[in-house]
Length: 313
Image (tube, rainbow, N blue to C red; front, side):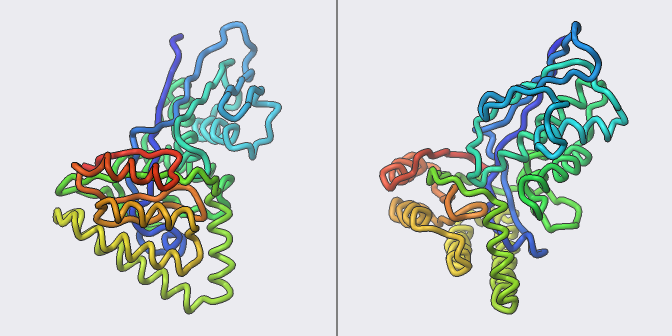
């Protein structure tokens, strides 16, 4: 039996991070320049149920039965088998690789889960539809983040720009006019779950203030959707700047993120903001396509350890 493989892209949140956890909308886009990949290879000599997980990026080489069910990679496989009512998997090796930075707000965990779920379900002869893949990945996201919004598994699964409201059907966005983003990585690891937890504590201590923050971000996200679908790309810049300002007030930015945001604007970006949980990870800048490389170089000079230029269409 030939090996079965599947991939899933990274992602960045364009608007709405943190507020999305509290019922406001968010817009997220796939980043296809980075991806997670899962390869399932049959082991004809192995006994039924012998499943080896190999993820050298994180130093994992173990049998499925030796891992806790709450280990995220194990959970992705077990959730898939359960959904297909398979009690014992055929002997196989599941190899996972990823070029998506970890704990950087780019959906690394969700992408790995989606790739694994797709590869394992195809290996079992029943490829799952996107809706089910996303739902299973969301269950694994709970292990990573505690109380995830669901946006990561959604945009990664569908690999399309999405407008997302927690608990509502996903909407894919029609991009009237393509636009270009430059992503700048601070190089600082910042697990999303930790940042979400801190915001939750702040919200509990000051609900009136934080609800106002979330309302403001929600309104910006709605305006951004209108701009994207009408082709008013330049209008996104001031909205990104304003969104970053609110996130700073919420305490989820950092000196490194602010430095990169300012550097992008000075280099000719139309707007820039942090993306994801904050406190580290990545920022994004909306740029005229012709200035993309110049902005990327400016971000590197300002301390970015990595930049990615991505087009949205």
